[in-house]
Length: 135
Image (cartoon, rainbow, N blue to C red; front, side, top):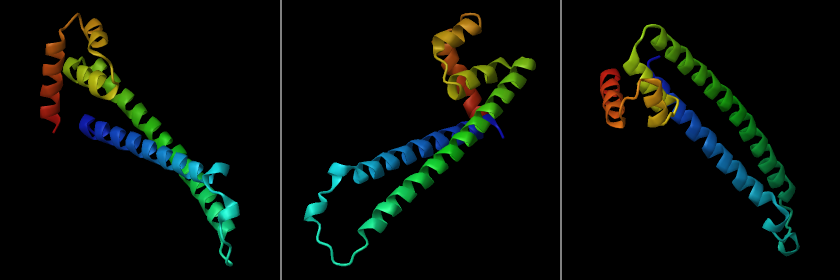
């Protein structure tokens, strides 16, 4: 996997986790005691208990999905760290800077300190050059 694919996969995993967390919160809000006044619900042999059970089952399933996705995200982070260490070992400064900026989320000041005080403009130029070369 190259840097661009790792970056894309990381963003997709983070978005998927966030989406599932939002859906869980929505389901929990629907299940809260004040969400529905049961005294006003007309019962005609319906399956009201089943819908609550289904909602709880859905929440549990989504929580397991989140755990799985978080484990994938950890694996992705380990892969990013491994590649970063390879770049460091072979002294590929431009790819190190790209990894620090885009994948590790470092700010320009931190990158500048690590790489002998390079400017924000130069950092952005390097990131743009590396992104162009890996696409």
